[in-house]
Length: 229
Image 1 (cartoon, one colour):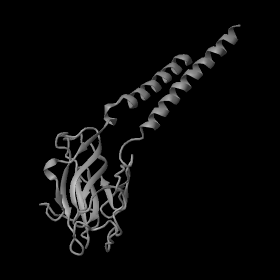
Image 2 (cartoon, one colour; image 1 turned 135 degrees about the vertical axis):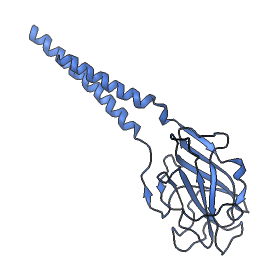
Image 3 (cartoon, rainbow, N blue to C red; image 1 turned 90 degrees about the vertical axis):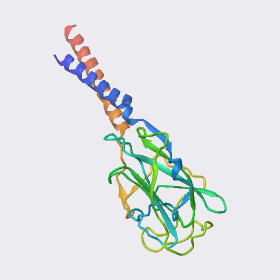
Image 4 (tube, helix red, strand yellow; image 1 turned 60 degrees about the vertical axis):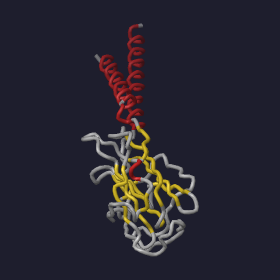
């Protein structure tokens, strides 16, 4: 009776492992911004709203992106990287704190990036959980919060400071390296929990259950053999 119970435990552990290893829900995909949204400056974009990133700022623009819903099974942004024409070259900024963030608890998944005023958005890419509703059109630039004054020339540098809000200069690398697991941030700059489930933990639990069940079965059989002899 005990051996049968241990065998069931091993089978249950194997099932847990298989469930979280093979589940297609954990697949990620890479998509690009809707071509109809670029190129544009923040001031020239047709939808202005300052609800993310702490703006408006005197010399910085805030760019807000949205991942269209899949209708009940929407994916979320894992990372977003925007490419800008600075007037003297191109540079990339990522939606990571302190001058960017990803918000997954406010309707559809959104991401924001703060950049010096006057830069032109020419492209953007994102890594998302699951698949996009419309992979061809990817995700959208939903609105911008243009700078209210100060230096708005395209050659504004990333070192320009800004009053209030997050302050400081956008922290982005010209190489555009995208972190594997970006942090998330609210519009006020606070941190949000990183979305998703720790798949590795479930796999480890499943494997431990399998190993424990097999070990106990072997020990039980050895004890039975010794008793009989």
